[in-house]
Length: 362
Image (cartoon, rainbow, N blue to C red; front, top):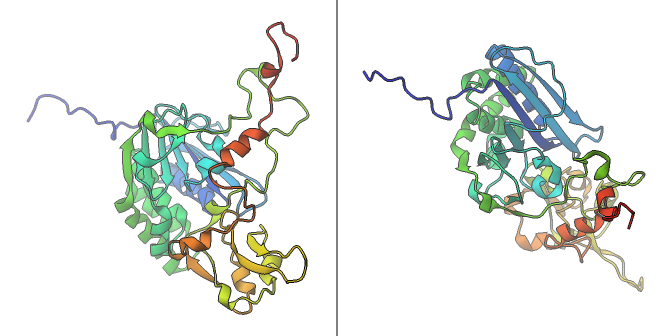
């Protein structure tokens, strides 16, 4: 036997205080994932910790943030505030990096980023200036569809892989007990999805070469009144044209078959987000004709599929929807390439930008 003590590897060193922030959209299960993770840490591992979430009343489609703090030294965790600098940052859908630029705020060189994405971790584009420790990706949507389970069960596997403080077995037990009120098949599917997810996890050391995405700067002031936004203005105005609801879908979307449609318009009446693209005759000589769906705004609620009287809209796996069906645009002059430019036009000056060298307003 070697007389030397085996050196602990980076993966086995337990953090004294662990902080996890989850960024998601309502309906993806981030709130439940936080509860399960905290319960596994406190009741399963015997740590001290807490969990809380931040979300609005809109439910599905609205931003959700879930926070977990754990003390492995069993010191009381009394803080219940926003986690600014997380040890693990979990993003439940890759498109949130574009539509919600603030989700990477506070990430540091010791932060591990976990993203639900089909891409390899080294191919994830990140904002300029971002510092991370490691990037991990998992195709959680595909795993969840195959296992017929919730997205949160799959994402929990990726979290525990990056979190040696919480044992896989304890998290699996907590996952089962948390859903004990549901049917046996649902509990089994969640556990199957959790176990299957480990085969799809890919990790890679963070590289600054990945930071090549321009984003809108954070609206929060960092220097008090000097760079605070001008009072009485809305610095992040709502904009339906720039909204991207694709992160709300769970792997399914409606597929439109034009040959079956007779343009009754029922789908457009029930659609909460005006996803449908119509051909309108400016002369009024012809009735409007439905052309297709703008999937940027579709959140997969399936109301149009339910109401369609001729089955021209059918629920389909997103991977099976032809690319030509995804070309329709409600706003024809707006595309993915110029969305960042459009956001920049909405940026408003701060006090610091309004003050000249003499201290006078420009």
